[in-house]
Image 1: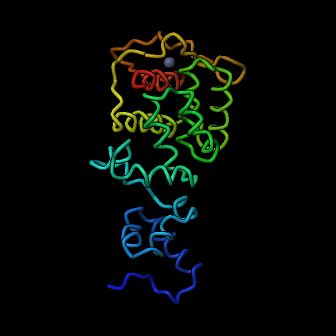
Image 2 (image 1 turned 30 degrees about the vertical axis):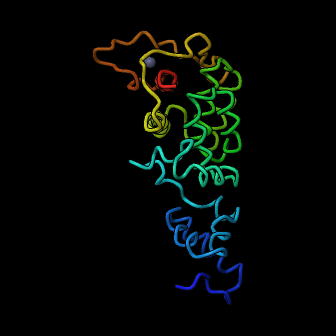
Image 3 (image 1 turned 60 degrees about the vertical axis):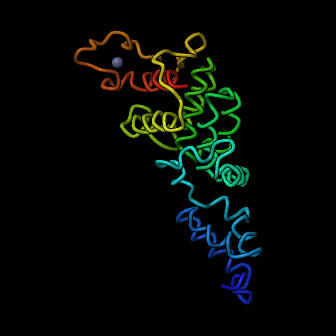
Length: 225
Ligand SMILES: [Zn+2]
């Protein structure tokens, strides 16, 4: 095969094609990378890196491939720099247990508002750090742009963040590392639920009570971080 990508096709068209196949999966960019200098450059166009779908990185055996020294680390970091929302989200969660939540919040910040998972994670990280006012502000943004804080959707997203942290190797030690600073908001808009410790755990496990399940999501995630 010749080592060039249709040299007579307009740059913008090839760039658009690269974007579209990358949006389907970042794996599709592989053949472009191997097709020579032009293909390599196209796959590294910021617009392509920003939009390519890196979801598969979170699945199964590739999960660990975005870590330091692993196969997809370099590519992943370029996606983060290009503003790829999913890549930013993964990087924020992947690094949280090692570099500290303040720094992970900084990584996730560009995603706050538009990317629901990142917004929820930033709110929860702020609860862990004891920044209850900031947490309340971000929870309210999440509620305004994504889901009601008491909804099943929010609950499922919280569980998904937990699972993603575990998939990245964070261990659930069943104790809150942020116990000393942990502070759930308690203001005019978001109240610390009064029923938190008042449930009979035999028949009402955490999560069943809509009043306090957001609180428990925060606790569960703090246990993993
Ligand atoms: Zn409750």
